[in-house]
Length: 472
Image (tube, rainbow, N blue to C red):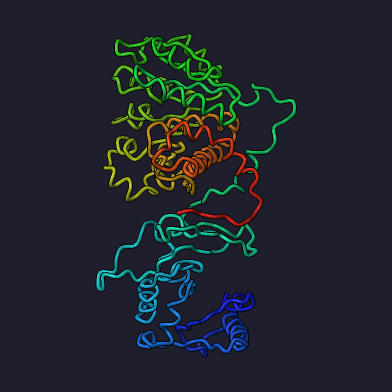
């Protein structure tokens, strides 16, 4: 990098924290080429073998640079940091210059699944600050989970064959290239029946919007048809939102929620006609309605998405949630996952990966555990990690939009449920990112995601570069 910057006409200074005689292989060759490039600029590298050398005036000039490139330690490093490196890291961190890390910020554990703690001895973290990161081929867990930078992480290709990239943790970071087969142009002879018929079961008095948003999001995600089955008194409200969404009346309780009386041959026939069922948005926690939810899931509908109060219906009886022989997807936030597992929210958040993976394995279903870096866990232990989304999406209704999108995409691709669920999560977050750029995080509302979903589809389809940018 130093040589390339010199060739580009930049003023470059180099600090080497080692004896040049210790360099081997490519490092030796690159160091010699760099020295020759620097020689033409009458600059020689500063060699530091002890921390005291970093207090010199020459070192001070280096740390006063306009931009600092951190290339001290890479992904092969394991803590602790040596005194010399720790001193250099502290000097970098004390500057105001932006720091670009090569591979990973020096001092970071590449396999970390959460942010590092402060160093207990000095009170200063032995990890370099990073304003941006350039890593290669594929990210390590820390790039995704450990909050290494407040800026972007660029994952640059260097010619590694895709088949050689295997995660020992069973993790897969979603990228646009993963979804190309699901986003191929539609057949000319296709019709609305070609792209699936989604039925959303939900809504209750005062919560009609949740089911309406889910039903419409399924259409925006590409489903051919979408209907909402809801209590009779709630139906007119839902029907008024989007003329494209059909409605089906269900018997209701005195509280305006779905009644057990809705169960029967008519509903069975309705379920049989649909490609996929999504149950839960706005359905309420009424005890009779919760019993209705459990009855629907128990009936063995071939493909079903369970969300929101549909999940809360299984509090204390999570054993009834099982996907054996069919496609079941659950989309809990940490609170709902807490109720399903009888773990505290703090325990869920501290062990998100294992909680999602274990539940998916034990219940033979797909778990979409929502939150920062939403996880999509499959029954075989594979976990997809989603890189899109922002804090502005922490607003009521965004989960209902996601439920509809998951349902809509799986209805189109029933044989690729895991990939379709991961694509729904990716597009959902990307639509949120586009909305945030337009209206800001504070003003973002759930329906903004539907508004920006077409642009999100276009961005994923049009991505040509092998490079991938992971945002903080």
